[in-house]
Structure formats: C-alpha cells, structure tokens
Image (cartoon, rainbow, N blue to C red):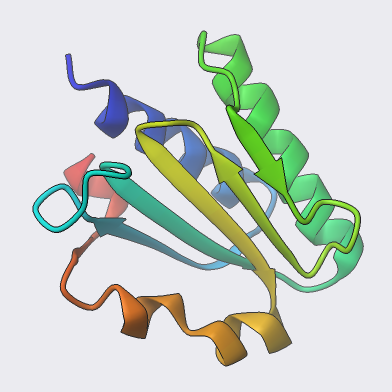
Length: 116
C-alpha cells in the first residue's frame, strides 16, 4: 500500500468533515522528494483553521500516522503540518490568496479525492 495516498485520503476527509474550503490535492511525487502530496485548504476564521488542524492530526493519529512538524498554529493564519509523505497547508483566506501555493507548485498534478 502506498502510505502517502492513504494519508492524503484521510487528511482530505478530515478537512472536508470540518468544512474546509477549496481543498486542493497536489501530487508532487514527480517533481519533489520532500513529500508525495500537498493538501491545501482554507478556513474561514482562526478558530476554524485550528479546528481543521486538530481534526487532521487526530484522524491521522488514529490511523497510526503522527505529525513530524507543525508550524504556525498559534497565529492561526497559515498552519503547516508535515507528516512526511504528505504536507498539509491550512490557510485563512487572505494568506491563501497571498501565498498562492497552487501557482508555485503548478508543475505538480492537481488530483481529486476520488483518485486517492
């Protein structure tokens, strides 16, 4: 089994469950060695960003995957969760537009959740 794909599927479900907005999955296996997938989502407030983070961490933890690094949780406007095979970025709306990771990683393949 490909762990990255399973982790990405679980993270997507956790983001969707807490009403994350505009959830994008970018397959970066062919262009980077840092991870297999990036997941990018938006929360409508600092509290929702934190709720999304906590749900992703809990869901993956229950499946046996632990976060290797978490950045930005206190500020609540861009949180990065590094699980090794996947990296989850959760933004508030303003920072998502500003950083535009989809543009930066446009060489990756955007996939939908059904492909996981």
